[in-house]
Length: 553
Image 1: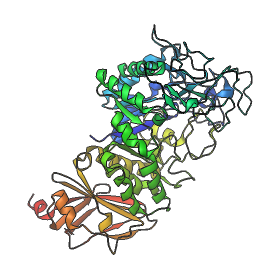
Image 2 (image 1 turned 180 degrees about the horizontal axis):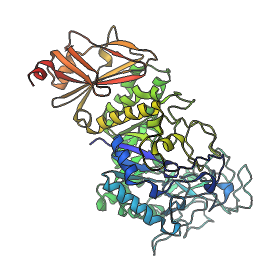
Image 3 (image 1 turned 60 degrees about the horizontal axis):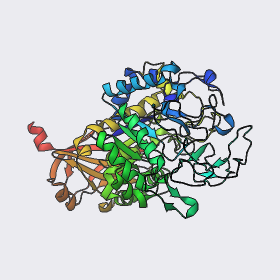
Image 4 (image 1 turned 90 degrees about the horizontal axis):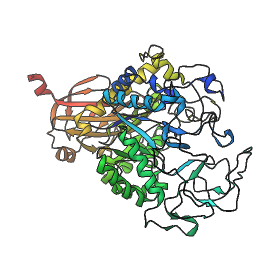
């Protein structure tokens, strides 16, 4: 089965409070809870096509309520400034004292619905005020045995700046850190700026950055042992996969060591790496990662095509660049870091990404991800507080997201309050994602890129086409990135028939699985282009069948 990942942020996903006061408190603006992600919500997500849910922001992180506000981003805090690897966010619990039990119940509900659970693993940095109160008995805390007078030692969990006080370029009130720890984005100064990850500190995996990057991995650094305990802790609770934050900022040697050990006891646990350097992709796959972000390749290019910056034919180059590991690349058009498709910074309408999403979902056997609200055309154009109006849905503030609230309808998850446009877009995503999840030509089949063979009647700047085939299931995918309806002639070369072991069909029926439009008596041969008409910003997925066989049936 092709993995279809649905990313949701529990803090906002089931927050039905409509106050939306900028910089508002939890009491003013509300906060979603684990308990509100009910079986009804999970079924609606599965019905959309999902196989996995990435619960973002679960592990306990710094918030203004529990930590120093001056070094916390927003009142709700960054989910990537972890304060306790062995705890969950109290904000997400109905009963704070039973917060872990509530999350464990969510894991069980998710599994009962037939969905897998993904959570974040943040290995590179923690919050400046990290302190685990929930670590298992007998376990050492991060930094507990450190020697702060040493700038570096593989025995330390943090990097220090001896003799220097933490004094960033902005006011931090009475917060005191001496000696200063190195900031999470490899900022080796006691004076980080507001553009740095000032709320976090870098973890030490045995790389002596101040000493030219020397690697001291023998004996095993202290941090390595701490991290394997943390991964095992969550795997024992039933977590199926870890989305690894900024994986490339941690030495590859650690991943080669830890992933096989985790698989010894939890063989089915998967690792999804946030890696942005294509030159490192194969190293991380060889180290044991199951999937990697395809951000600087396919995401960036599909965004560029959708934004009219680049030609559709360039999509070919971007899948070919990673062809040997393409099944390992995670495609997406939205996540919490990227701007919303429907924002004024991207498309202005969720419908405009339909061709790009069709390519992302169907081009390969690799996983595809959607971010909660994407299927509703969420604009992300609120000025929530710390986040500001940036085309993203905030991860730093307490907030209610209008499109998700309209869909959830106070826990009914019936979409009753959606607009016609939102309802239409969600129906498109549901058909597309279910097709990607369930159709054998997509999950197991071969792909043949048709772009190179196109001639007159096909605009390579605005259109893209490919075939998918498994057994008798044959799909022709054609997308139109143009902002107007186009008549398109798709040429199928002789080589495609040989590669797919597909006979040419003088008479065929082509049924668009996204709209149920049927084209009868079409020719699926190498000597006659197949003519289709596509409206602006749409795609079609034609199931091609032999008309003579269909007639006999």
